[in-house]
Image (cartoon, rainbow, N blue to C red; front, side):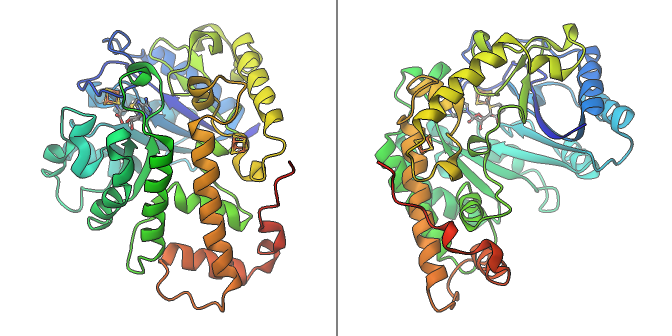
Length: 386
Ligand SMILES: C[S@@+](CC[C@H](N)C(=O)[O-])C[C@H]1O[C@@H](n2cnc3c(N)ncnc32)[C@H](O)[C@@H]1O
Ligand code: SF4
Ligand code: SF4
């Protein structure tokens, strides 16, 4: 059995929202649900081929599908993996506008994480509906979710403010840029890369010196851990995700990524294959793998390759072509990661007085200092090879 896979399931592509940046175009966001037979087949294959799985319920808007669907889905998980199995985890990624107390109680009972897409005070820049209205009906106890903010041209320099907004509410926050796919291809919502870099570094610097912050800032915190060495968890863009992630559409078609993946990379259909291994031997998967390998060959001289792993193939595909580097996402990672690495190295080289540094970074630094095996010169970024 293989150790682990993340499976993004899109139970529907339909959505009650029409975000200006969405990588799914309005003609894709149509009604139609994944059948329980497709879900049953998918879970059967995952359970027999992988020791552990994380299901991410996505879309379209996953909460336009009735709650009874998710109850059946959890029953299927229990059928294939066993009750309260440590082999399975779940996250619902939602626009938050349809959250309610009953659903939140169910998610708590079944330990389902809830991720809400929202940009706090700047939510209306990309979205028409405001999840705060639904969220405000939940009590503090029910109100446990994390937020993903998608950063556009208008909010590139507001990242610090968005972090502070969620920090003051004690809500975990992650930020990522709009990529030029689907609706965002040519409507001016993609941020200017230099402004994004500036805004992202400002948010990190504020978080780093926020001694009282109770929230990790993502992806920055993951970059800190990545720089400090083993274990090196990171966001999906920098983990060499091919073979570790798949996305399944309502009709059962399988793709290597959830982000607007074109038909040329389709890996087959759950309803016509007998194992996921077969999907990883498809022509669609071979194509994305070959293009990604060609891109990574161009990364060979990059000083941070071992932290980046060549970045996200779909970001590259939409920005500069699958086989090319130096798109906005590459530049953003290079600049932001290098800044974070410099700051962390400065702290490691200092006298060890970490007062005034936030507890996540403080704990990571102290943890690594008591285990010197993972804090050493090898953590330093080498000089560029060319
Ligand atoms: C496609 S939505 C699906 C789930 C749900 N409807 C939601 O909005 O969370 C998942 C995430 O993708 C983000 N997203 C959509 N289009 C994007 C784009 N062009 N670039 C980057 N992120 C995008 C959304 O902002 C959202 O956080
Ligand atoms: S980003 Fe999510 S909420 Fe917005 S239109 Fe796309 S699927 Fe719907
Ligand atoms: S930062 Fe860019 S060039 Fe460097 S490894 Fe990542 S994708 Fe390749």
